[in-house]
Image (cartoon, rainbow, N blue to C red; front, side):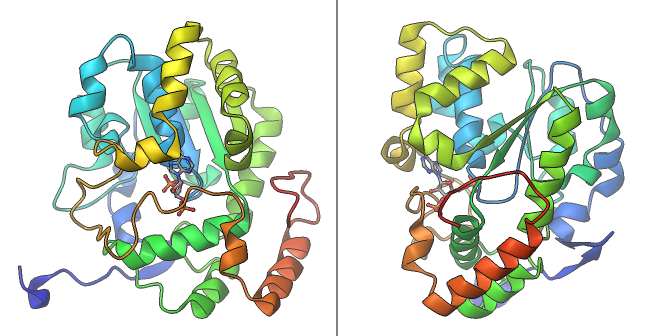
Length: 296
Ligand code: A3P
């Protein structure tokens, strides 16, 4: 298709107090009425917090040994369908999930906690929440917006960062997302709250914690295979997990598997951007006990 025929970048709007876009809200009634099954596992993150990394870890834990073909033939976004996805050109997330016959279903979502369909709570499904430090999420989300035409145009870095601090990006404020999920976790034993930074620091320990939460006991060999497969460099080369199969993404602009580092924000934030961000951070997080990264 010529440039003229390409669909325009999506716009955002306020949706029940959260900045959203049609690709997320366009199937809303079906998302809210979604029938979770007791053995469903829901993976929730604020965008760019390591969703794909943790999705792949869970997929290998559940299916790596029982169905090795799955890893070489089905892209990760089909193995772990995106609950609220409402693209008109593709089956919606709920349609895909309703047709899945493999169990358990691994389900990806970025929904703020107040929007999670109630059946997940009624069925007491296991939920894995992944948080990543606010500054690295901002940098990663900015580059994702540049390369992915189904995201709004991020503009230049400085104006993007302003929008991000105000929560005017898809899925709203990073602060609201991680804080509200953290609060929910305090009363919900079916939520496992983990961080990208902890995963980077000690993958083996975090996989063990995940297994304890999920009630899984992989062999030592399975764990070694998993740890090798989910290394950044290996995921970057793996076409089934690096999103090279998704046409809306121009990986020449910025690869989906971009850097995979903790504190890459230091290469993007100016001193004054950082001071301003720290002020906002202190204010927003003042009543929250969550500590994700010591560098903020
Ligand atoms: P960067 O843009 O900072 O490199 P999501 O899957 O939630 O969209 O998150 C994408 C981010 O996770 C990207 O961050 C990507 O590089 C990083 N990532 C994906 N797999 C990873 C891995 N195995 N190790 C470290 N980071 C990984």
